[in-house]
Length: 483
Image (cartoon, rainbow, N blue to C red; front, side):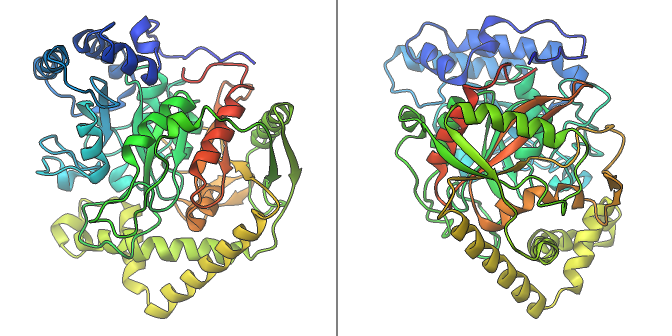
């Protein structure tokens, strides 16, 4: 399979911007490349490409970024011990707090907000030596898998300017695919890491619940489904960034430690595995024609690498599971949005999907939340039983191919009406509700050149095993990731 050429009129990326993050970090640390050289190459690439796709927002002044690069080169010359991301120019998703750098959440309410602290994982990336050059674009408050907002406008797909980039990590995925950053962070509640990765032919990893600490936050015990994680053009780069982001933080009491090095762990790669192919759950999930075909072809290639698959539809009440997802999302994200909804001036600045979540939260009762958590618990038990027989559960990453960027969300999939702005991404809820690690791997393109991916879902806290499986799959790809 050949990767189709991007329909954007952009020059090919230079050698530095095409390098992996692992290789770039090594060349900087051994002083084969200066930080200034690397940063300049990426800033030039952003100047050439970003005006066409609007992936990176709140870009810092070039002189300030280069001054930081020169300071990094000087520190390295003095013999400091560089961190694993030392000198890499990165842009942080605009849902994450970045000290001293505007963070809008894609909302006009926060159009001029500059935090005085970093999110925990951002602080770790900063301490690891990353140079933050700006932010990556998101939907308003991360709602919906289409990246557009009233502050910065839409982000366009890396392959076709008429199509959505997905979301909510759409800016990150497009910036990666078009070589504007070497690696990127994302976040995922209902597919926000996985969907844009699939829509832009890159990798996106949703870690196990608690592996990457969430916060700082005023509430640290209830919100469990939203997860931060890495995105990259290859599995090794994801492992590099995950190693920086992951690990227990005392102010995130549900967080936990992981492996000492995910990148080193890839050296002992997976040689075989047992896959449960869930597909469309026996017709329960409406899926656009062509999606399953690409995934099944990818599974066939994966089989040649030692991963045998068999179709399976686990017995469960999937409608009840979806309702539980909606309830738990409103009980967490909806309650956060209700703080803005309760202020009439701010309510007028919320998009309809945010109002829907806030009003849903207002109607919830404690017994409804408890019942939803009970359904989630039953699903977790079902998943654990599946992992007694299988190493991976596999589904498509999205139920539709990238669609027209001016369409806020698909109202219909395969002839079935969607009853909410996120129902068309139901396929992503299964890993989220189980707290399992899940990685999007690219599966190729349809006849119209639209990318797609599939999810490899692993055992709870089996993050390294999922990355190893993704690395094994990566060797079967007959095209390069990115655009």
